[in-house]
Image 1 (cartoon, helix red, strand yellow):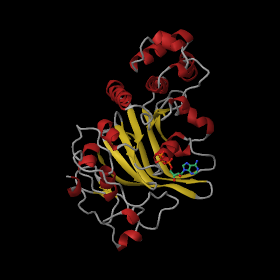
Image 2 (cartoon, protein in one colour):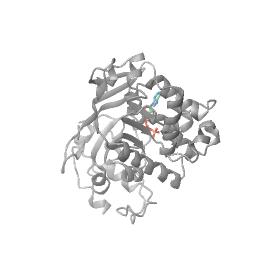
Image 3 (cartoon, helix red, strand yellow):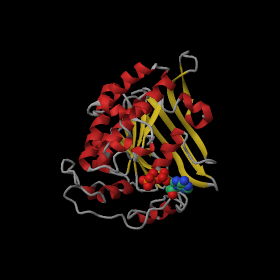
Image 4 (tube, protein in one colour):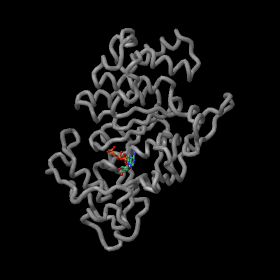
Length: 340
Ligand SMILES: Nc1ncnc2c1ncn2[C@@H]1O[C@H](COP(=O)(O)OP(=O)(O)OP(=O)(O)O)[C@@H](O)[C@H]1O
C-alpha cells in the first residue's frame, strides 16, 4: 500500500495553552477508508480540523502531517507537503483540490442562497479553470455519480429543496468536484435516518472502488466504522488508544477502552452478531477531556483493569499481535474474552 497521508505525533493546543490532541499518529493509504472513533470530546473533529487548516485562530500544532504526491505549483512534478506548515493562500494548493471535506450538517458545506449548479460549477471554474459548459457537464456527471435523480433539474434547485440525505449527497458531489485524493468526512451520516445513512455509506464505498478515493471517516458509531472502514483508530481524551484493521478491532479489541465502547454499543445491526447477544453495558465514570485528563493513562479512572502504574505512566502506542494492531496500555489484559 502507498501512503497518502502520514500524521506523526500530532499535538494541538488551543489558545490558553489548552491541550486537545496529544501525539496522535495515523496513516491513510491510497484508496483506503480509515476510521477515527471515540466518545464525544475525544478529539476526533480537532484532528480533522488540524488536517484541513481549520483550527480556531491562535491554535498551536506540533508534529507533522505529510500529504504525499501534491502537484508542484507550475505543474512540474509532485512533492510531499506538511499540512501543519501551510499558511493562508498556501491552503489553496491543497484544500478542496487534494483534500476535501464533508461535515455532519450538509448545510455547513453548501451556501443556502446559491443554486446547486452555481456552487458546483464555481468550484470547478476557479480551481480547474473550466469554462462554463464544461463545468456544467461535469456537475451533471457528479450529481449522477452520487445518485441524485434528474441531475439537470437538481442543478437549478437550492439546498433547502433537498431532503437531508439528498443534501448530503450534493455536499459529497461538491466535495468531489475538483478530484480530491482524500475526503475527510466528519460524522456525515450522524444526523440521518438509518436507511438514508446506509445509502450514503454505500455511496462512499462505491466512490472508493470506482475512483480510488481515500477517506478519513470520523464517527462515534462503531457499527458505521465496522461497515465502512478497513482500519481504525480509537481516540480517548485526545490520544490514540488503539489501532487495528477494523474487523480485528471490533471482534478482538485489545484495549479496555475499545472493549468498553463495544459493550456500550446498541446492537441494531444483526449481521454484526459478535456482541449482538450481549446486554448493553455503560462505561463506568464520565469521559475526561484532554484538558481535564489525569496524569498517566487518561482512561485509568474508568478502567476495571487499571493498576498503580496506570496512574503515573502515559502509555504510548506499540505493536500488539497481528500486523497493524497497536495499543497504548501498560496492562494489556485479555479484554476480548468478556465480549465473546
Ligand atoms: N472551539 C473550541 N474551543 C475550546 N475547546 C474546544 C473547542 N472545540 C473543541 N474543544 C475541546 O476540544 C476537545 C476535543 O473536541 P472535539 O470536537 O475534537 O471532540 P470530538 O471527539 O469530535 O467530539 P464530538 O463527537 O462531540 O464532535 C474537547 O475537550 C472539546 O471540549
